[in-house]
Image (tube, rainbow, N blue to C red):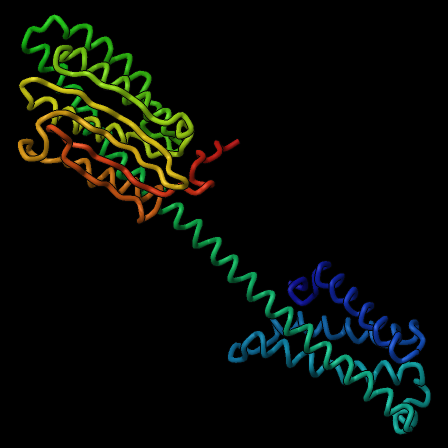
Length: 349
């Protein structure tokens, strides 16, 4: 409880350092003895610091903290100054203070400690206010990050069952049709899920890990329809370690298979690519399937993809869709990547 009324060591060191510098500057200008001036000014500064600290817990609730501390420092300056002038002449202090020398000394010390005390108090209040603002900003940013992480996890939880159910439905179709490819596809699916499941909830996923999932998924789909699906992956190597929300690109590839290649009687090709243009990154999934005009639509996962991409790279991130020639669809992801965003978050120790 008593600690609330006392200054910290940091406050004490700062005030005394500034006081010594102040005394040194004044004695250099006035040619007064440094030790004598220090003997008068230092105790007054300590009294003002004690008044500054005690004003916080002792002030009435209706009085603002900054005003209470300014008033405490201002009132303590003349009282402490008069006391320091009178103490060396304790036997004759009332008479000495009425002399021209005593009164002048008391007035001079009061003015010096009052002016500089209020100035230092104002500076301290300003720095404290700025520190509170910085702390509030840090807390706000931390809260925004927590909310963003929670939102990304929620969106990811919506994607995971969608992906798993689609893949299992493909295996079921092979089994029901009696295809000889059912068993190999199922074995590849088990191996794929064993490798993919640890990455589905990875908050620090990279584009490289995402491309591994995309390749494994496309290999599975090519086994299901070997004569109707070809694919290529051509993403710039410098994007491999780019921080990227898990399963975002995979959702676009799923849509390309489901809405582009599957409805086509002849099948087609899927091309996955990406490049960096200064601080802008473009990723795309292009298929030579039936295109938007003949398909059932672009798929319900696009809204989720856009939300997750904007959650990671801000509202400037966007999705563009273009008809591919002679037929098919090209879906592009555009986003700006600053240096701190282009690397995955460090893993906790």
